[in-house]
View (cartoon, one colour):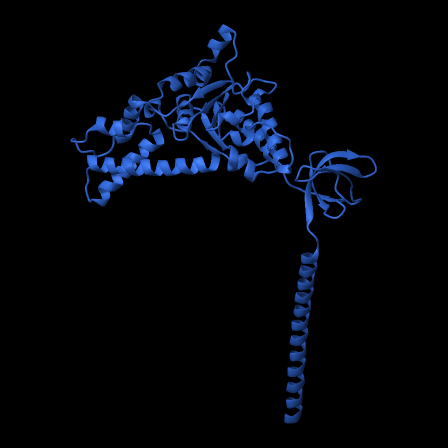
Length: 380
């Protein structure tokens, strides 16, 4: 009997081991199959994303690829139903459309712009009284009192162009008028628009203007507008063609078939000399506002604005400092105040003395000269 029990235990143990091995073998086979499928997927060629421009008979279509070129192609028989404007995937070799991309083409445009409700009162801007008056007439008055223009029977300008040297307060002016009219401030940087959104710039411009209309009253501030609105040349590359498409869409949105109403466009540039005349003609950015470096009185105003909350020793000769900052921009005057504070901190003082300001002026002036030399080397 004992012998039989030993045999039964041996058979039972053997059967259990076989079952475990079969289970493990099954799991390993499934893992191997998954890995093979993964390898096969990795070997598949990438598909190209394209846009359906036009559908034609007999399962043909005209598609537009990211570089802007268009092709006459076949549509696979098992492809989902397409319509013009849809995004689709096509084989790279013969561009046969394989399937529709189930996604929206619209941007979440708020990711690509700086949108805010600024808090910059007119009192924060010094030395630009003439420019403030012009902006108030062109932007603020139509937004605050549109009925006045209806009574007079004229249409206010759609937008303005602020131009002048860097650091003179162009962005500050735009934020101040947005503050005074309680408008949404939507900022676009022209150079980033061109670099980041090749193939999509025109669509993004369209959606930015739609966002501005939804958020009205609003101000669209286009910094470095010369990046997309420079004088047109022969379009040799796909990049140049894309810039032109973006520019043409911008002109269409500014002028449009309907007046922009509670949406105003403020362009900004340091290089008005290279702008295409089309953007400056009547009905577009036809009001030009030059924003220069401040004169002596302007320097005094800007300096007083920036130092009013600073702990400054009473012995400081303000007029002497103002004279030393001749030909400084507003941004440079602000930098002087910041640097003077650092010199006081390094000297372990809680008050800023005249020596701190003088050292700060010398530092900012030397950095400015270095930038001027670099600019001259770049542009001759």
